[in-house]
Image (spheres, rainbow, N blue to C red):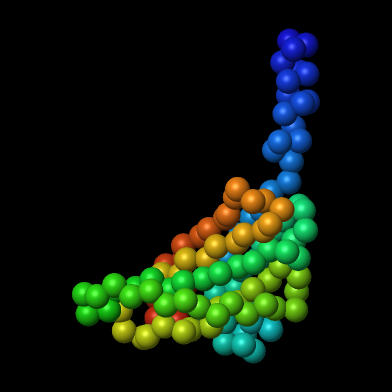
Length: 122
């Protein structure tokens, strides 16, 4: 039992900290509404959250053809908050893939895929 406790204490720093990416309702953020955001995301990073970069790509099917569109991610005034406005065509079926990376987590990236209706989250 004592060896197990010592191993757990020694392993704890390996799991300390984290990098998360969460999508929120853009209607809950006045700044996002003013910027015509369709998606709002928040990151949390235990180490140097200001170093986190969020990238996004719209992936869609339009008339049977797959399309990928790199998206401009808007930094909001709230630390760790980002927004995306519509930058893809109305026609077709679309999802947005967002990825958060941070140099303090060199072997880790957090991603999320957001399915979309014409102007709202599913």
